Length: 214
Image 1: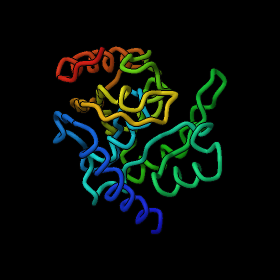
Image 2 (image 1 turned 90 degrees about the horizontal axis):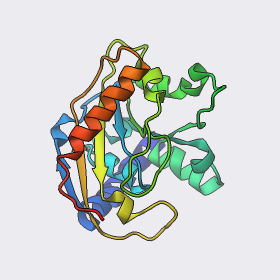
Image 3 (image 1 turned 135 degrees about the horizontal axis):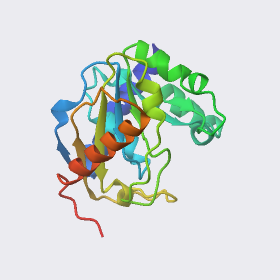
Image 4 (image 1 turned 180 degrees about the vertical axis):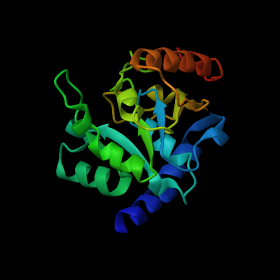
């Protein structure tokens, strides 16, 4: 119960004011966000603000069911960051995938969350890239959702956050940002089809962004 309360207070008192006051946020298709799980939001990743922005889009009554999937080697790197990540933000820590990884064990906690009707926040690039440049997509989400009859994946494109808090810096710079939510996808023939469909969705959503980046 305590982690739920801490997360609600954190999002209400810190995250939402930061996102909606300090950032000039342009949200398109917010109504397409899932109201319940199991579901996966798959967003591009350029900044630590990405997770906070996505959390801020959900109503307070729902935010405790939204679980960011994050790299264990970074977010469990020290005692304070680990406590904050696990007990306040409510991340699902995951070891970065390598060629010999057991996919079932890798996604154990993610599967538990989906069976609990949670909504996962996942970044299919695997890590933060260069600001405003999308890297190649990984197939991890396909392996995660392929065994479910109904677990939609919603592509999300964010622009501008890589300039507000870029990789390698702790300095926050107010900047206009876009968040564009796409239509849910829930039928992928195989992992290659997943990559093709998701890439096409990202390219389509990017056309709706209005923020100009240099």
